[in-house]
Length: 232
Image 1 (cartoon, rainbow, N blue to C red):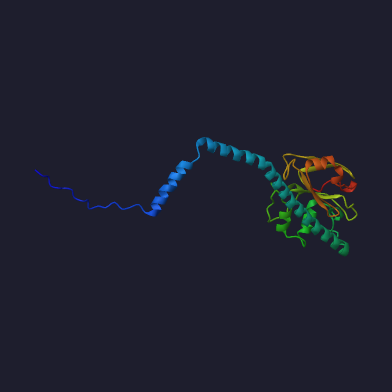
Image 2 (tube, helix red, strand yellow; image 1 turned 180 degrees about the vertical axis):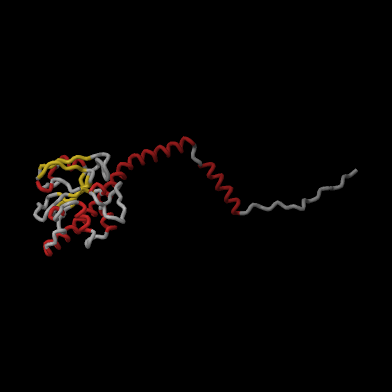
């Protein structure tokens, strides 16, 4: 007895794989073949960690130099404003203008107030007196030198060109004349024991690292006997 052919073609056709799908499959197969092993991944991570540790001190040094450069620029702007005020004082004879030590009542508040009435806006003055870690509000004049990032010395028109006018607050000067010594407080902003920025009566500003300041006192400049005590 012959069996009849009962095979019937399926009404459903299997669609062929598209070129895009085939490419995707090949990509995943290739990725699987070339994938990192755990050991290789750990080696790569270790190499990256070593490179970061080697680069970090250089990055920190570059950041510090950039911050000091900005503070140096701020001190120069304060110097130029004070110099302009001193020129006006010589011209007009006004006792409330001039270099800090030439004012009728030398004080930080008198200097700051004079600068903010005709030479700098309050906002600009506060920004110039700020530094990393010591940021002043820009809506009022600081009343004492302890509020700002800088130390102000009572220089006069007759002061020597090497006498220090402003220095960052983390540095402490001792002595007078050219016999100066400097100390750094690691806990005091803006730069702790990493260095300081200063500007002299002659207008030259400089940033000093601790070894530059302690090993070469001449790099500091000088302080006149009448200007050795900072203004408060």
